[in-house]
Amino acid sequence: MHEIIEIIKQLIIELGPFVGFLVIIIESIFPILPLGLFISLNMLAFGNMIGYIISLIATIAGCLLSFYAFKKGFNNILYKHIKLDGKVDLFLKRIGKIKFRNLVLLISMPFTPSFAVNISAGLSKMEDKKFILAILIGKPFMVFFWGFVGKTIIESINDPLIISIILMILLLSYLLSELVQKILNIRE
Image (cartoon, rainbow, N blue to C red):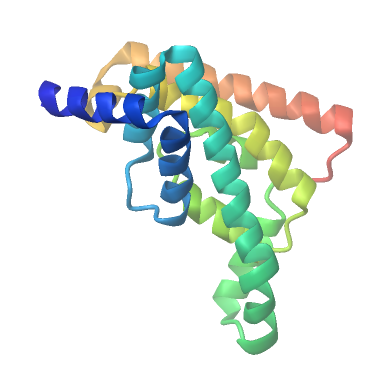
């Protein structure tokens, strides 16, 4: 396994940072790909700081690409041509009205499926400002987790240190979201 990781790392180094950026963008379109692995590989290939920056920018760009594809493209088709089931309509209304701090927490959690959040937010009536700010606050923590703490789910659950780090990250993202919400007067 170590040899395979080393081969992939060398390939990414040879192809350059753009490839590390591109695979994360592709992951936002095809969510079956392992985001945590790509972030970890970027950090292995380009170092902690550069790998983190590449991964963070690509993750934010991918989320925004997905959000706007559904908000501007599919949203019009959905609301103009498809009669929504009552449960789906209620779900989208609830997503659109999710509290800012809860959205930030959801986005910052490492095991939350980003594509589902992006698509749901895009299809709902969520304000662009609210989504963008939540992504800018929450994603740095999620990328940090996958890059620096990138362990398996089972190891993370059984390791008290990892659980403590996750809780501290979530608390920090919550406090930061509260501060930003007050400063920028974001509606609930």
